[in-house]
Amino acid sequence: MAQAAQALIGDSEFDRDTAVTLREEGVYDAELSAGWTIIHAVNGGYLLAMLGRALGEALPHSDPFSVSAHYLTASVPGPAVIRTQVVRTGRTLSTGQASLFQYAEDGTEVERIRVLGTYGDLDSLSDDIRTSVKPPAMAQIEQCFGPGDGPAPIPGSSAITERLDIKLDPSTVGWAIGTPSGKGEMRGWFGLADGRDADPYSLLLTVDALPPTSFELGLKGWTPTIELTTHIRCRPAPGPLRVSITTRNLAGGFLEEDADVWDSADRLVAQSRQLARAPRS
Image 1 (tube, rainbow, N blue to C red):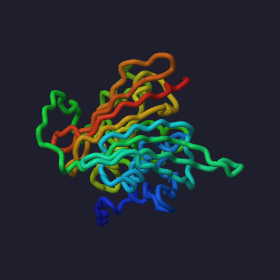
Image 2 (image 1 turned 135 degrees about the vertical axis):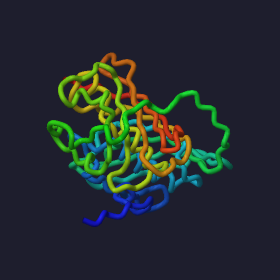
Image 3 (image 1 turned 30 degrees about the vertical axis):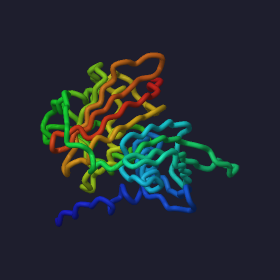
Image 4 (image 1 turned 180 degrees about the vertical axis):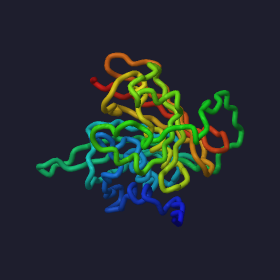
């Protein structure tokens, strides 16, 4: 059987499904694809990538440096409108905000997400790098486990798993066989299923694409994101990414997830922190 050609940046399912269409200045039409749902919700990282792309088109600088999103109501597959506003522009950085709206049954707009982002040019950054943190210690990709290795699919939609190439480190998959470690850790290799290499927009998806750390804490069910801040540190090299996510504190029904993303050149290319509601199980 002939091997399918690797999808290219700008011409992949991810690019098509996060595309926005300019309606008028500051207003973009979009279509939330059902292909990026998990359990019963559209994935928050996918939504962040779409809003990030809209801001990249609205601002004079195209590369996201820091993007903070507040998830107000659950998004559903279907049409949406994104409204952007330029807050400030400078020589090296520009800042804007964007909100994604969908329509209620009576036709009124409901705000789903509000984002504030600062953008620049990643290729112009200094090459002075002083990183004390090391890439995560993980098993080789051939020794890790994907969705097809689990005993049974999770209840509800798992459409997003067909679009991702995730291989989880064996030490963080105890939850899949009923023996969670009790540690708030999730580590794995990450790529898009069609082979498209990573870029700054897909990194906005990557930080929220692995199973939640709450699974390894022995909790099951949806872990909805309340707020997610992502820092893009440099343009990723081609090849698979390594993602490490940790939770140090679950209290009052909420937990944080800190994610580090490393590229094939051992560079820390993205960092994030999110606040999420813990599953109620």
